[in-house]
Image 1 (cartoon, rainbow, N blue to C red):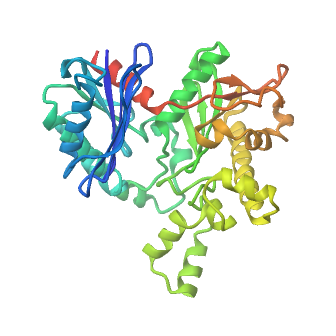
Image 2: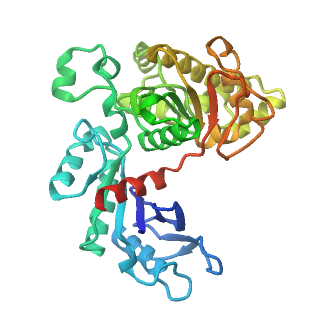
Length: 399
C-alpha cells in the first residue's frame, strides 16, 4: 500500500510517498514559493532515478503544486510508480484539531468544517493545511484522504493538566486550555520505545523529549499523553530556537509600556527574537552555539545551559506526576544529534535511577539505548518519523 503524505504551508508543500506496511520511502520533496515563482525539489529513493533540486516550475496555487508532485511520481523515466492508481490514500498533517479530534480521521465535508472551526486556534497553519487538502481533493477525486492532527495525541490529558487557572468561562466559551503539539512525533517515538523495552505501550511510563528549533516534552503513561510542555500555542514550555518558552506574563505589560510596543510587536519578539537566539545573540542553531561556547562566548554557553536545565526540570516534574518513569526518550534535531546536550540533560538524574554511558551515548541519528547497562531507567535515542506515523495512521483508517 502506498500513502502520499502532505504537509502544506501557506506558500510551501512538503511531501513523501511511503509504504507504511514495510516503512519503505519511495520519494520525498518540497514545493516552495507557491504563488510567487515556484521551486520544485524531487528526491526519488529508488536507485537509478534522477532527482530535481529547486528547479523552476510555475505553481500559482497549491493545485499546480500537487499536480507537479504527481507528475514527478509517475514520470516515465524518473517516477517511482507506474500510475496514479498506485497511490492508495493521502495523509494530511493538520496542526490543530482543538477538542474536536482526539485521533486521526477520514476527511469528509463535516471534518473539513470542523478543521475550519479550529482556524482561530492556529491562524497561520490550519488555513494552509485546508488549502492543501482541497487541492488534493480537486486533483485526486475518489482517493481517500485522512487528517492527522499535531494536537490529537494530547487530548487524553486530564483536566488538571490542560486547564489554566483563569476564569472558567475563558475555557468554556473561548476554548483557552493547554493543547500541546508535536503529538505525531511523541506518539511515534513512544510506540518505538515500548517495542525497544519489550513491553506493551500500556505497561510503560515514558518521558518523550522532542528537542529541536521547536521543542516539547511529553509525559506518556500507559501509551497516552498525560501532560506536555507546549500549551495553548507552541510558544509555551522550554525555551527554544527563537521562542521564549514559559515566562511571567507581567513581563509583557512591563516591556510594552517601557518600549512602546503593541501586542503584535511583543508576540513577534517572543516568537521570533527570543529563545536561545535572543539570549546568545549568536544563532538559533544549537550547533552554532556549541561552537561559540567552545570559543569562549559566555552568552552562547548560557543559552544552552538554560535550555538543558529547562528540559531536565520537565523530566523531573513529569516523573513525579506519573509516579515514576521507565524510559526517557531523546528525539528530533537536537535530541538525535547532540550527544553533549543529551549527556548534560540526563546527568544529575541518578537519584531517580538514570545512569548514562558515555560510550553508548556516542552516537547520532540511530535507534539506541544510550544509558548504562545497569541503569534502572533506560535512556533511548529514537529518530522521529512523523511522516511514517501519518502514513501508518492513514493506512489503519482506510484499510
